[in-house]
Image (cartoon, rainbow, N blue to C red):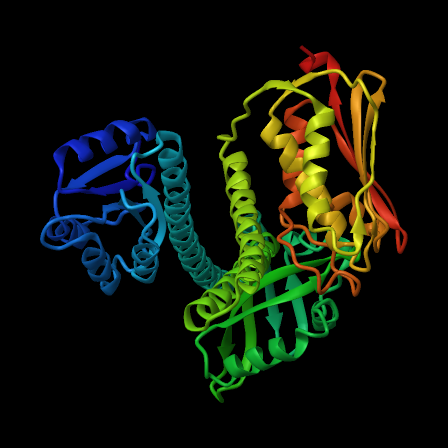
Length: 522
């Protein structure tokens, strides 16, 4: 396992027996376990090492856990490292409030429950690894992009030098075309004085045209540049002709023969006469549509995730500050805690969905199959939503005596929770949300029906894609990351079933999924 794959977990306790016990509980995680017998030793380790999480004993002689946490948070390198306090004083609320104020993300009370410890530590290890992987991916992308730009400049220079050499050899057409066939970029040679342009075959193929379908005029080029991009392209070109820039470099959209648009990276360099007038420019066009789409998806996803994380965190911080700074009745405190619990659940669901998607992409998603009573799971899942139904009602249409099947019950609950949550979000005016289950051929058919806004026909084919969100006037103010339905599809596919939707715009939607009996029945 590489350094990127193994995470550091720092264990801080003044008692060797406690450190030995923690190591025994966490060794199955196969991570790098670091030990410190005091706060001072922990601080020395954190000067040189980054950790996924710190397990910090509260009661230590000399520098106690709270003082150690304060110093950890004061350092730039470790100020965001998650800290879980370990304590035997489970009822000391003042101590817990102090710990959270010092930057703790959680408390674990002694005696320690192994499964809880491993589960909580695993979450922060996964987050730490994902952060490392994203950083490595971004660094790799920058390196590749720099290499591409360097290669493009190098290629451009080669083209210019080749053209000058060919002019010295009376512009040998045969050698010029041979050179063009050796590159995947489209080459152009613009005679500015005559307003004629030579376009290589690859330049035309990039836009879907054959060699004879595009003439050698400047209008053939500019007429295909997206109207919104043409002013900036013209400005960039004029700046190069004026000698302000050493090269002409522009990214813009161009229309293809089939009506679609491609992003093009155009590079060129002019040749000037003795009067300083640009008389010729030679350059290349490269198709960068895939890169632009990746950039767009990345920006959109980061924006959505940032918003979806910030909303519950802002709510939690606001209610926490209110309860710390002002006195409220027990009833009002309970109301606040209820809202905070909803936001914590929302935040946990978001993080779990994100981590599940990453595990699926890495091929590390696991399933634990067991005997499942579908009726029971459906009723329990719906009951959770019915408790906070608001303007929605949640009737059941579950057939009696459905056979027991073998599947991952936690994942079934996750599927039902995502579908019910979507039904609530996309029926903002309330209404009936019906959940049903019955035998259908050799499967159990389950469904969730709402009376909401429905789904546009053009969005249905993309609905179960990762990060896809319906974008229209009716849904613009409805939150979401576009992960829920993608996870539903992945989970149902892993169980040998299928999932689909039937919808009518303005009247609601029904999401169906099947659990086959043949493959998973006991």
